[in-house]
Length: 223
Image (tube, rainbow, N blue to C red):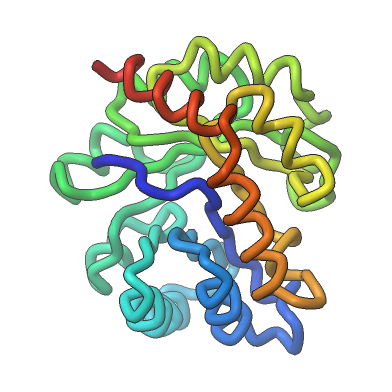
């Protein structure tokens, strides 16, 4: 499926003001976000399903994509647009069989080998990082840096979203590196003004020539 967004919002209800992730995502959607990954890995299945139902209704009102982290069953149950898979998830090829060709499948990657595997398994896009230091990705090792990101973007057959410590202050660096898009949690979810933070990122990234070039490169790589 075509990747039709540049800013990819990942949820973490513990970082949301008042722990109200629904309101925070609503503000982000007001600001122009058009893709949300529901990533609440600690929630039991029933609670995650209920939250996913609400999130699906909310994103649908804005015409935005909803992907569910890891849980193909929950994504199918609520009619999400797809899933985002990690290293311990089922292979993207299996998720594709279950969800169909019309589903959007993203994969988390941290090096060139994982990025290549994601593309070979049929993922539509991948996140790559952590690019910068960030507490939420400390378990994945030291940041890979902008140079590694640039190399990954040049070699990738699928669109690459820079992840990990990406903020409005350094978003320009990942754009220049060739990232198709940016993925973030705290840059929007924990912002004092989630709507404003989202609007600034969407406007800035969408109007950047380097980002447009990255889009064309990704398309050529898949053809």
